[in-house]
Every structure is written in structure tokens, then in C-alpha cells.
Length: 155
Image (tube, helix red, strand yellow):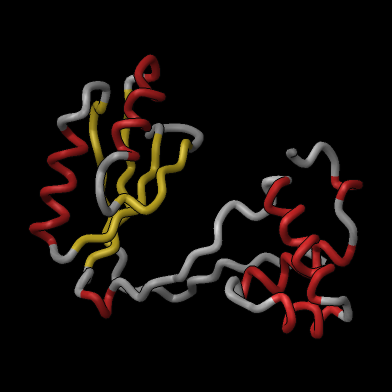
């Protein structure tokens, strides 16, 4: 079941999604208390939102830097247009690539990567450069993260 239109979800669904953006591991009892519904209603609604594809996955946000990943980089990847999908599939298999975006203009793709150090980043860049269809890369290293949020105002 996928969302066909916004009319399939109501204000309570949006409030559930807002809470889950901040606290993905909240219990159904606590969720119900906050939103003035029973735990079973909260469970049924969350299950429905998952089935609709509105909740893709519940994950923990890890502090990679504290685990020794000191380099965060954004890699602009110019790709042969005929090989875009194949390149994207290959990139998805490379460890430490967090996101791959198909972007407008030149270059074709933007990848966000974390690495332990510059040498590790160079190894990842070598892997990317060997993919058939990759024309060139341009890497920008983040000096520091000024904002990191996974929350969007829904109501």
C-alpha cells in the first residue's frame, strides 16, 4: 500500500510522524499519551504509515566522529549520461557512502561520504574513479557540521 494522495493521512498521522522524526524508538504507550490516543491506536496508525511507505525505516543516528570517522566529504561525480543508473548502483555498494543524489546540471551525482582519515577517503575516491562511466570527481571536505537535523515541520 502506497500513499496515493494526502487525503489518505490526517492530522493525527502527521503528528505521529513529527514525534517519530525525533524519537523513533518511543513506545506506543508514550506515543499514545502524547497524542491523546490509546497505545493500540498508536500501534495501528504507525503500522499503517509503514505500509503506506511514509515510514521507510527506524534507525539510530550514530556519532561517526566519536567512532573515529574524522572526515566527511561531498563528492561531485560527473557521469556519462548513458551509464548513470549503472554508476549509481555501483556507488551504492561502496562502504561509507551515506547518500547519493541525482542532481541538476553538471556534475551528475553528489555523494556524501565519511572516512576515518584522508588516506581512507583517497581509497574511496579510487574505488569511485574505477567505476565504468565515471568521467571525473570533485571532492569537498566539510570542516565542521553546523547543523544536522532529520526533522521537517509537518503540521
